[in-house]
Image (cartoon, rainbow, N blue to C red):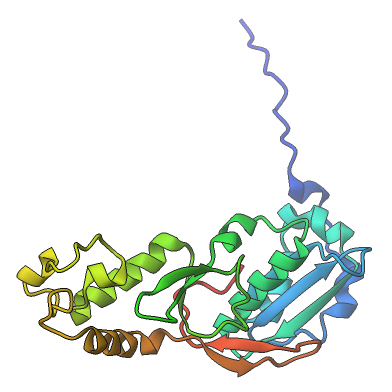
Length: 240
C-alpha cells in the first residue's frame, strides 16, 4: 500500500515578504552612538509612528531596520529623528513624556509607561507619584524611578529595613497614635513612633538615606532638545 503524502504545510512568515527599508537610509548617517530617544515618523508631521529609547541610538535604530516583524511600521515610516540625552535615565524619562504626549501608533509598551513612577518626598511621608500625572522633568523632590507602584514601595521598605526607619511614619503600615510599632519592639525601628527618637531626627535620616536616589537635573543635548533631564538613579533597562 502506497501512502499518499500530503503537501507540505506552508506557513506565512514575515521574513518572506520583508525588504530592507532603503527609503530610510538617508536618515541613518546622523544617528549618534549615544543615549537618547528616537522617533520613526510617517506622513504626519505631528504624530510619530513609534518612539523608543536606548543607550546607543544608532545601534537600536539599525536593529529595527533588520527586524521583519516590524515591516509594517517600516513601510509607513518616512523619516527618523532623535533627541540625545545626557544619560540613560534622561532617555527613559523623555521617552515616557513623549509617548504620553503623542501616543504613537506602533508603541506596544504604553501600559508600562503609564505605570512609570517615583517617590515624591515633599514632607515627612514619601508618596508614589506617576509620570502620567506629573511632568518628572519639572517636578522637584523626586527619588528613584520605578516600573510600578509595587517596585517603589519595595524600595522604600528596603530603605526602612536598612536604616531602622518606622514603617508607620512612612505610611507602609497602620500606626496607632501614641503606640510603638511592632518593629520597634524588635529593635528594627529606632522608635520615632514612640518617642525614643524625635520625628525630626527620623525625617533627617529618611532624607539622608534617600539622597542617593534623588533625581537631579541635567541639561538635554542634541537636535531639538529643549528642557531638562533627570540623573542619575536608574534601576530600569533603557533599551526599548
